[in-house]
Image (tube, rainbow, N blue to C red):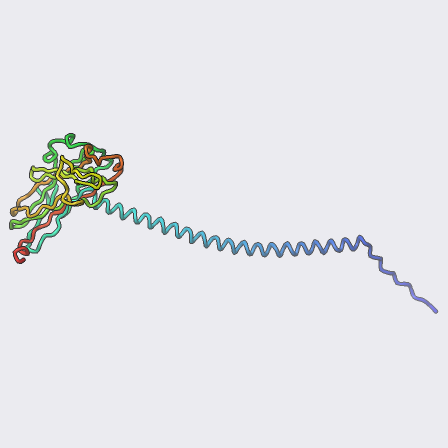
Length: 277
């Protein structure tokens, strides 16, 4: 019997070969795992960035909106402060019988400058003074605003611009005050050269009124004068002076930084309505 050539047998697998094969699988698995984790992390990071961007955009929108709101409020306050100032003089009710009044800060009412409203201005960073320190010629010194150190002074004119005689009421009101500054204020009002000084009066902790001034008519109303006569074409002259009186018991450190705002209003008396009633 003849026999063919004997086939070469496979080489035996050693322990070292098994170890190498196992290491290769571990490396491949680690690579696959690393790739999978990276892709997952990258997707999560992208989503987080998008979410953070949306949050930032929303937050910036809120901040911007808030800033715009604050600026708008400041703008409104600025407008109101400019409009009202510390002293405003106005013409109020004209009645129903065609009679009229106009205001002006010069006696000639030059160039049609008559108006129904005057801004008497303000004085900033005042400290207390006393009446004896004021100039003696405040009513004749100058028309319009002529403030001095630590006091407000404003001279103006009220004219009957109609063809008939009329009567008018005058009201002077403290429209705003902070830190009780109005409790130490003095308001001097000249009318055609005659003057009077006014002060707030009594308080919860002090029952004696000031002896150097006439007491306010009410807590906020300085004067409320009725039926002043003014002939057709005639003019009344007014000067208003305001200061913080250092001799007032209420002139204390607590009022530092306070303010006072006031308004003087002239109303034509409707005599036809009075006659009908």
